[in-house]
Length: 114
Image 1 (cartoon, rainbow, N blue to C red):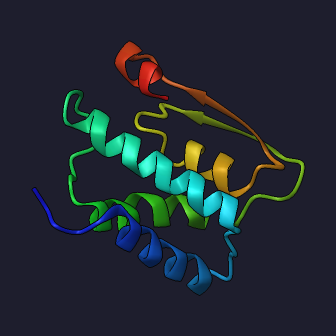
Image 2 (cartoon, rainbow, N blue to C red):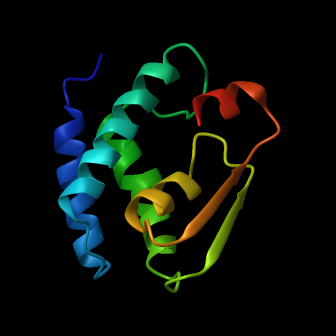
């Protein structure tokens, strides 16, 4: 088990968001923290992502998703086909709550997680 905490991972994510000139408010950070906690828990039972280190997940999956979130314009609709573990769609929905985001996946185990 890795000793890196999810909070440290989200601090790194906040720094990544700032470097993309994309601000995350406190409620969004709290939701991303909850998402990361649930993802790590589910990932022990159901293979959702190949990484198990919270910092690696934050710096790769979450940060990449945030870069897409920064490109969306207010009021747009976003469809994430093949959402898997929720990247990028769930991160976009959390970071940009004003967007209408639809997550679609064909695997029941992933839909159950989402």
